[in-house]
Length: 400
Ligand SMILES: [Zn+2]
Image 1 (tube, rainbow, N blue to C red):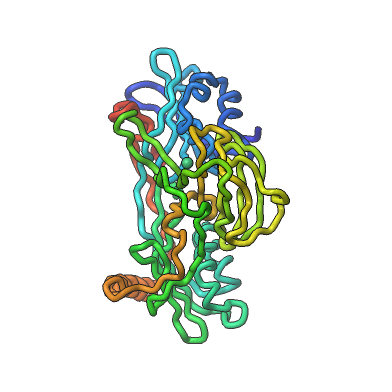
Image 2 (cartoon, protein in one colour):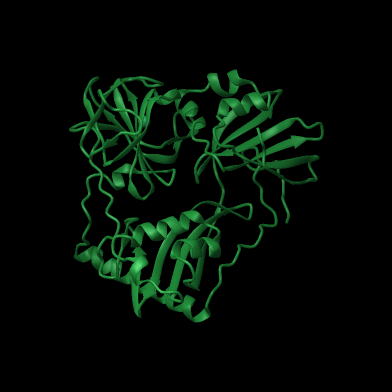
């Protein structure tokens, strides 16, 4: 395995240890990782409950993780970020390794910049910020209303304001676009992220409108989406990155949106799994299926509402149900925020709140244009406690 690694190194007053930072490779599984690091597979995988096992499947290519080693190069602790809120913490205590899921500590900074279009909004945003994700979000939200190819000219103005999470002074997780303005042929076009986490134009009309159908008709929801949740009885952190629909075995499962099937086979704790890729970076997943409908296979195009499979209990599952996930650019999002809502129009009260928010955003855009603010890298965090035992008592600090 080729590892991309940077050593940032450290000595503390408590003990001598060093932290190595790595990048998770494409195709590497959590089990591969344990094997490579010679860590106990039984204790750190097979003895875990099914939810924790499921979490280990969330490791994604490109994610940076850290390993803390002592003087003898023995692994003391490992941090594996799963999403922007939760991470796996593997640590050695009393001679054996333990597994736990713990929250990620990060800070959020609002960034703003303006630029003159040179090549295309997509390429220019990447050049300015280094973020492909930000460029994708921008283009996806304007593509239904504007035609950049026809109307955009070199030298047109673009403004963007977004939130970026930082962990150890490095950008971390998906940036969140708050507002953007693009001026074409002297006319300004805006999008605003509203309180309901959807984008609207200056008139208060929703701009994106990705519509989803309920994947199982008339089924009861037995488990909701959560990125991280403290389980009061088990006394541990958990995540459920989808919605569970309880239904009888054999109940038809329909495609929540039109798209192309990119996976239809067994996959670990998911059991029989279908993945569908939709427009604008969306992907839906259907797990624990009893079977696939005849003719449903990888590469096939499906329409919204078309039956693709049948409810079952394959993989790690306690009873017949559909585990349904929605991802955008790879990141799990709550399907219930998107499901069965037609393009939204704001009601009077919501419109009033939206207009207030729009005013604030417009002021920020004006300020950015006046100052010609350039993208600023957040300052490196001087001392961060990120390897810790519960109360953060074992500190490993990093410095630039
Ligand atoms: Zn589930």
